[in-house]
Length: 371
Ligand code: SAM
Ligand code: SF4
Ligand code: SF4
Image 1 (cartoon, helix red, strand yellow):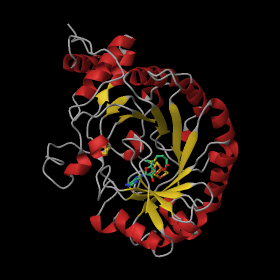
Image 2 (cartoon, rainbow, N blue to C red):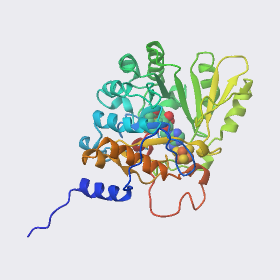
Image 3 (tube, rainbow, N blue to C red):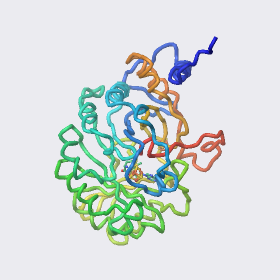
Image 4 (cartoon, rainbow, N blue to C red):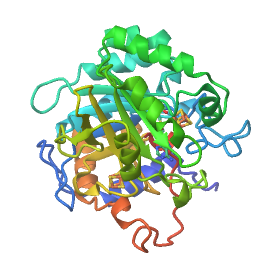
C-alpha cells in the first residue's frame, strides 16, 4: 500500500500545535514577554521583492536573476493579513507598519491599507498605520494610500548626491524621483514624513550634513540609522558602521542640538532638536546603543511567519494555523503564547556566544522579514 504523504502544511501545523498550550491564552491586551515587554508594534512584510539592490540589504550578487523569491501562493493574502493583524491588536498592538521588500510593489496595496484601517485597538481606536518605502513609486501612489487610510510614511534615502545615491541603490535610480515621492507624500497629507538614512562609513557619511541642511526647517524628520549586521548576505563589517555619536558630532559642527524626550516607550529613534527651532532629527543606534530593553515589536513575514526579533533565525508559522482551519481564538492564543515565551535581545548580546550560539541558524534577510 502506498504510504500516505502528509502535506507540508499539515506537518507544520502539527508541530506548531504541539508547541502551543492546551489551555488557550486569552487576548486581554496585556500580554507581556519573559522580560516584561508588551506587544505594541506589528511590522508586516508584504513582499520579499524590491526594485532596488541596496548593498546593505539586497546585494546584487545574491539577489540576482536566479534568486528564488517566494511564490505568490505562499504569500499571505490581504484577507489573511488582516485577520492575523486583528488578533495582534487584541493583544495590545497599537501601531502597524507595512514594509518589505518594497511594499509598494505589492499589487493593490491600498486595498490592504483600507482593510487594516477598519481594525480597532483594544482601546477602540484605529491603529496607527504607517508604511516604509524606498519612495520610488510614492509619487504615483501617495494619494491612493492616503485615501485608503494610511496615516504616515517613512521614506528611505541615503544621500542627496545623485551619483552616491545611484551607487547605493545599485539600480541607477535617481534621487530626484525619490524627492518627488516625498513631496507627493506631504501633499497627500501622509506626514509628518520621516526620512531614513543608513550611514555607511566611507560610502555616504559625507552626505550627513547635506541631508541635514536639506531637510531641516521642512517638517520632515531625518533619521540616521547605524548600518546593521542584519541578515546573512550584506558582508557587514564593524569598521563600516558610523556610530550615532559620531554622526551627531558631525551635525554639531554646524548646528546646535538639544536632546528631546522619547515620543513613546519602545521608540527606536533617539530624538534631538535643532536649537534654533528648525525641527528634529533622530538616531537609530541598534549597534552602539541597543534598545532591546523596551522592544515591543513583532514581525510578520511575507509568508506569515511570526518573528520575535529582527535578528531571529526562525519564525512561527502562523500561516499554517490560518490555512489549517484554526479559529480566531486559537490564532490569538497562539500569538499570546508565543509572545509570552519571548526572550530575544540580540542587539544587547551582539558579539557574545548568547547572540550567536552556533546552533546553525541563519539569520533571515531584512527584505523577507521586513525592516
Ligand atoms: N524597501 C523599503 C525601504 O527601503 O524603505 C522598506 C524595507 S527596508 C528593509 C526598511 C528599512 O531598513 C530601510 O529604511 C532600510 O534603509 C533599512 N535597512 C535595510 N538594511 C539595513 C541594514 N543592513 N542596516 C540598517 N538599516 C537597514
Ligand atoms: Fe529594497 Fe529597502 Fe532593502 Fe533597499 S533597503 S534593497 S529599498 S528593501
Ligand atoms: Fe528588538 Fe531584536 Fe532589535 Fe533588540 S535586536 S531591539 S529585541 S528587534
